[in-house]
Image (tube, rainbow over all chains, first blue to last red; front, top):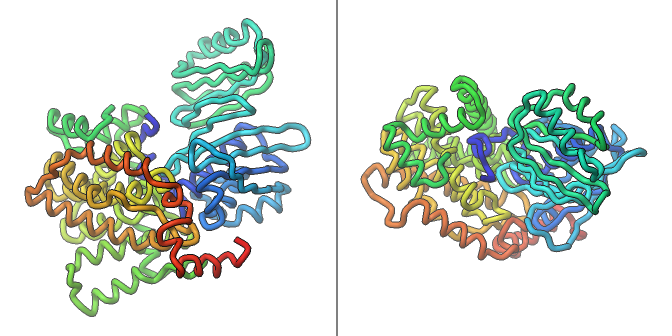
Length: 220
Length: 291
């Protein structure tokens, strides 16, 4: 089920005016920042359909900026996030994209700094709830209902086993798992939804495992 | 985990517990939390709702100047005259609209189920409170009951205007409030379900057509519609009036109607009231000619 908590319905506590266009946008921005692992220096954000048509009135622009700065939905400085981003050296460009998309509230974020880049598609499905549907060209379905670990790795035998072995050793139970690859033997993505939040020490151990390139976690 | 209103009512009746209790137990189970933790989280939301109403009663104004001040205006009217629809009704309406005035002014609110419809549940709660004198625990339970019904709508249809029009937002919010009022007033689980169904039935087809794409016009006043209809439906259910169409089927109808709505009537600010001469003029005034 898309919604699994009463607090998805009664909540979130947020700065107005729209749960899907403001709070949801902030959460998509924050997910991108969490996955990038640091504050980006630039962001190019494509907005589609309802997001594209109404983003100025709903504050979708400052909310996405707030999310990229790490703000929660009720951050008192939310409406000033565009100015704060500029002060902190984060350049943001918005593109009203007329391409067809599956969901009316869709945003594509391309963020980066001098070293790294990340591309993500997020949809805001209502009441502040969001889903990440694409990461670096990989399709995925991340609900945010559970904590998750995202692992970029090389498509080699043993990569998955080395990860699950470490999780098993630390008694972390896997609730849902997806593996996608771009091509045989190339870059691949593991998405692992777990039942409890994963300690950083376990993440560090995972980083050292065979064929692993990059790791991010999402706290539910 | 319940998926439908029928399942929700069945659990409540079989175990002889309130709908709020079904929701509380499910939340404890799914999130592996204690009753105290779940209560505390809802208490925080209740406090946010209370503060938003307090802020509204001081008088707020949105950046565009399109909305604000009506909650205060209604309260003043109620002091000077006896409202035709009754004091409780207008108190709920003013608190519902006030919450949304705070939202439009980019203040802090609790989405129930969304920000644009955030007035209906707290507006009715804080008005009905004056007559029913609930305990703090009963006020928290009110939110769990409302949440239980919203949970079914969100998982079987939608709660956002962009996906399903205003019927999904104000329709859901008003219906959630109606179900919660019934429980607080001592009605049965089935009566909550009937109150929910009767509210949503009267909201079917309502489009999302915000002027200039802002959550102001007509959103603030739609909270007046949602909250007042909630009280009427709760009274109907408590009087023993039932819905001919079962609750889950009404939710199904809402879903299919939303799917048939064109994008111009789903929170794009392109159709309906947004596309009236005055609506277009206001948009031009706010954004200038370029937009």
